[in-house]
Image (cartoon, rainbow, N blue to C red; front, top):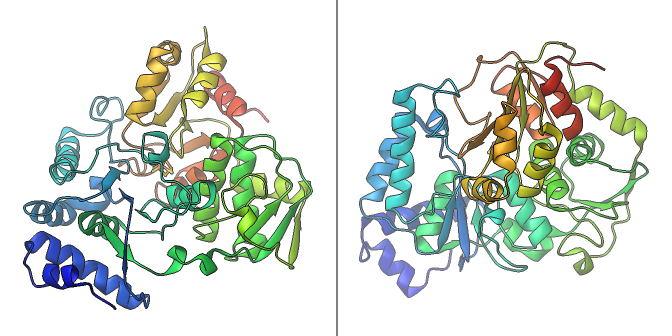
Length: 398
Ligand code: F3S
């Protein structure tokens, strides 16, 4: 890999041990992926924040790193394992909460903005088309590449942190335009009506075309809510960091329409919902907010809950910034008045909730995947209205 004079000096330790270590990490990754050089980035988004996932070993590593290392570009943080103001209501112990706070403080000391959200693009980390960035969190990576047209590989927590410290990332993969080319034309013969349909679409695409970059035709309108749901689901089920939708995503004019065609119809959509939904009646938890909700989603939830009371746990996960905006608009009071919880800084997947609930209803295909696999929950996926109805009734009625 080509190294600039300055990079050689960093590697010689002239700028401290923290920078030297961070550069070594980037060079090791660059070597694996055959990168030709490092390139400057506009921002980083760092995953691997939950103490539930990183444990004491991860915390010790970060502590050591933080002694000398500081980030040199805008860097935001993915959710941690607990909302520190609601740990008791979440059934999480004090010791875990203390350790999680320590993890967050270590990142803060390094200069990372402690946004604690998987939707950094809703809280000020908003790169433009063509910007090179180094983001972790697969749903945010797919959103950044596809919707914003920024360029990022799917970074791990440690590689995103190293990139934030050096302000550069190895040039390979999604940083190269040719790697972003759509390969299969996906024609939708079914109308997508709800964000949850966009989540189901990610699952269908994984079944029909696997890991080929899709060019998805037949979507006329899609807002942030729909696109974040599709980004999360495509990244989860196909592992892809990018998709294109003509007329909607950032780079659709930059590529030719692929020749290979695959169609998706209403039977595929019905099959997807069947796959995503298991059979049960009693509901322990209804979860909205994977990825973290927008203010608009909180508005809709407040409208559906106004003057009513939930009969089961209803958790809505979002960023602290979005919660504050929704609070000013009165939505949080209405939602809280109905007995639901608006939880910040974490989510049902990265919090230590394994085995704490048996059955879950959600509007997110990504949540379905991880709550089954990581938390051992039985899961149903439905649209937002049905999820709220389920929370109000406390049981599932077909
Ligand atoms: Fe975000 Fe957690 Fe879902 S980090 S994308 S809410 S699994």
